Image 1: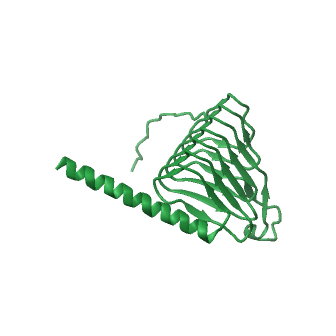
Image 2 (image 1 turned 60 degrees about the vertical axis):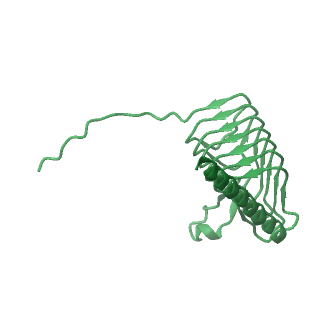
Image 3 (image 1 turned 90 degrees about the horizontal axis):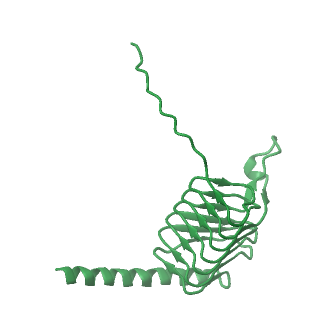
Length: 195
């Protein structure tokens, strides 16, 4: 029976790979010249959300993406991902400007990257109608971005840096730096309510 299950597993994996490759090819046909992928591995087909602007996604070789990932582009946004990177489950990269990621970077689950932010200065207008501010994001080589990190517009993260889980990065991080989101855990006894 073990051999039977191994064969089923291999067939399911092969069929899954064929389906993912088909979906990616379909997206490349729908958006010609805008999705440039070299030898990369996807465990699920990524979600590509393009507007009509000349946005572009470039992923170099040997990048692996596990689980769901979404790439959202507007206003000519560009996302460039270096070689040898790894993205864990449920990451998203949203670009209206440019997001550049170096080689050999690791991304934990739930990492969110935004190179833009909503305008909200005019109290007489709806926030959704006020447009965006935007600035490029650059992440160096050999960086580890922990789970549930949010990286905001205009940030540069230097080579060999580690960003601890749950951090919100809104300022530049020098090379060879560890950023930790210091959370304190205060344990208190809950007092019963007198009735």
